[in-house]
Image 1 (cartoon, rainbow, N blue to C red):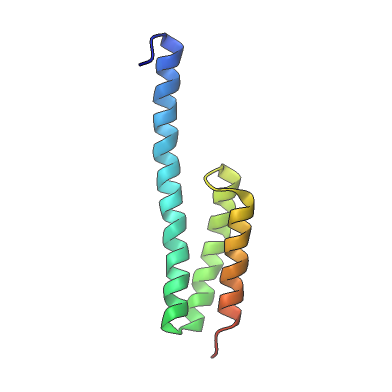
Image 2 (cartoon, rainbow, N blue to C red; image 1 turned 45 degrees about the horizontal axis):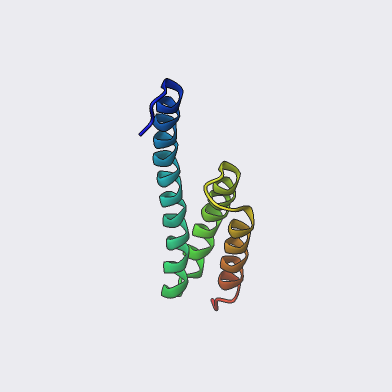
Length: 88
């Protein structure tokens, strides 16, 4: 347990950041899930629209430190390839 005043404050700040990061990551996963559901359903227009919102969300998550830059880039790349490969 934290004993000093500064350690207690750092603990409170870490808790706040963890909550914010958890919410950001959840939002990112939701946008990615929308793209994947549209791909499975075979709705290319919906998939393209969802990808346009998922891409920037992933990049912003990487900028904020919620996820690694390369992981975000890889997800965007793979989703884009899957959407392009769709028929229709």
